[in-house]
Picture 1 (cartoon, helix red, strand yellow):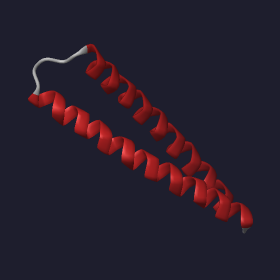
Picture 2 (cartoon, rainbow, N blue to C red):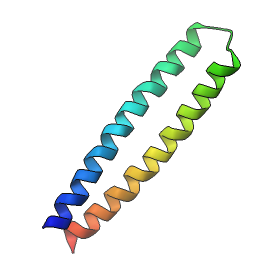
Picture 3 (tube, rainbow, N blue to C red):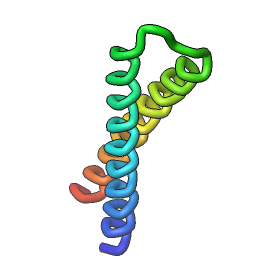
Length: 73
């Protein structure tokens, strides 16, 4: 039971981070549509945020899989 609680806590934190990163990415995307010119800094921030979003999704997927595996065993 303790392992399930620990895994659930990790999963909850990961989903909160994914939600925050998704909101940040959507904000950057929306801002990019309104501004036709992009500085190199803005482009780098957009690419970094996209990469972080992908990584966070992968983490959530793996943690969800591990959580269900423990839950069903």
